[in-house]
Image (cartoon, rainbow, N blue to C red):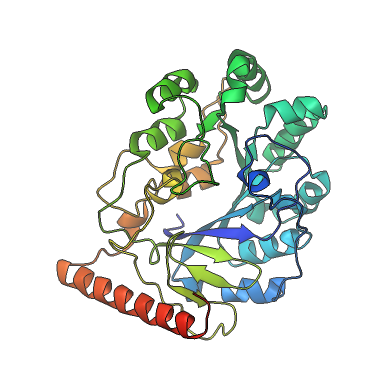
Length: 362
């Protein structure tokens, strides 16, 4: 069994999209429409920079653009190089860029077993452009190739009249219920719930999908995390266009891990320095065990579904890998080590801020 050592969320630098979803926070902030820029590093260089030796073991990568991820032409080559290193990869997509899927389905079978797709179910847009059949055809294509997948709905207010209709459609096509995620208002500070309803009203409306993702996110939504968090050590965010790596969304500590691939990566836990009002992507970071005390769910359950025909959305290899928790596979720090990490993180971030201030960047 491959041992899950780290989870890294990769930002794909594209904001262009082939859909016009009304709840898209990129569109609301007027960032939509920018095609993927030229990358500073080749796919081969990126693969070497993300070797198992450099990352300390096998990593679960999640690749997501601010627009449609699959619109980046280099994605096929980059994904292949990361899979060649022995890692596992998830790609967030609306499922409509057929050319990119056809390219990836030509990967070796062993790569396809470690590749998965998070299909975003944009119901109203799929109906508007008459692409519903294509959406489900793509899902069947990746399933037949041996890949894993999940189907996820952004549960916005505008979709409330279609709940029954959506459930019946997805169950007939994918033989299981949708998973449900929570829309956040990216245009406001602290990313609050994007709904006209109270949190309790919203929960009652959307809980009928029996989604572990929805239930877990609701259980921690709006809760400020004060525990010691291993983000930055066990998990991180990576900008694929320039190699910038940081602990989490609020982290002031950044490093370029592509520039000199012989240089070790400095994995520093954020500890108790998180500035976010709540962990709005808790379904990945917390479910994977970044805060060991939170044990109510695991990432495999959040992504998987058991189908009416006895199959599952995750293939056996992916299911086994994703059901592990980072806190079980990595050594936790002692109280003294945590204290030292806190001091170190604080000193590094203060020095970085001072440098930026002197350069006129802050």
